[in-house]
Length: 77
Image (cartoon, rainbow, N blue to C red; front, side):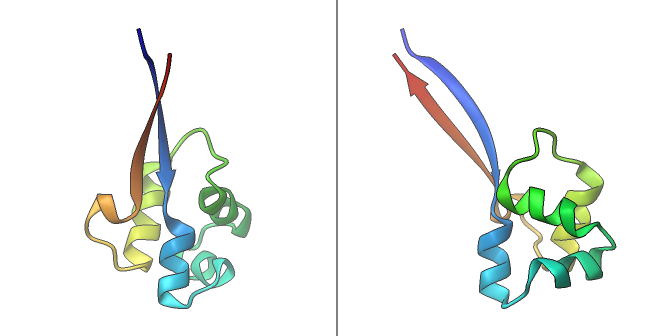
């Protein structure tokens, strides 16, 4: 029987590249710490703060959650 592992991946790096924006610029626009933006972009955070995510979405002009958040399902047997 397969065991599923669910991981959420933020697509901040991709969005920043598409918009020609740096993590530092995003931090300045959102008012979040640069370290926070970096951790979100690297997907090293274990918890996604809804307020932080909303600020990032606002700054990047993202209206659809699927544009910035991806669910990755891995199965092991």
